[in-house]
Image 1 (cartoon, rainbow, N blue to C red):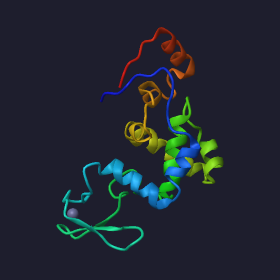
Image 2 (image 1 turned 30 degrees about the horizontal axis):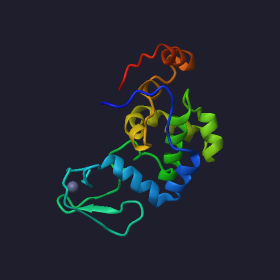
Image 3 (image 1 turned 90 degrees about the vertical axis):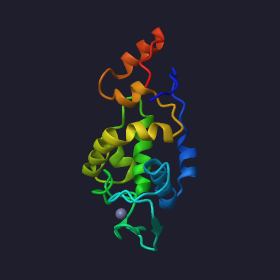
Length: 168
Ligand SMILES: [Zn+2]
């Protein structure tokens, strides 16, 4: 992966986020853009001949294998019942917190249980960090994206001073 190395964070603001993702529908479109950058495909057979059908939880169907699916199918989101909108905010909060966000803060800010918050954070750190960095108009730095819990702020400050960056 390539990307600009920046000495400061330049993401979107919380207000911009709220404007861009006002509802579940907008959040779903965002996840679809992340998972299907080149167009929707069936997560079961990877067929691209799919169509939308009016159903809340499984809004698409594959003509090849005839199975229904959603953007969650076959991803880390599958086991979660939380709305995608909450996932969007959780990812945002995690990506914009220098040291990562705590499950306690997510629990309070999103009105979800701490257990759910912990679960989300694990998934976000495993799966979404690289994807979401770009989607939030980056440039969220590589070190901040991958280095959570390692060097912390101090190490990053030193890096910023010396001007060295690991890049992406
Ligand atoms: Zn299929």
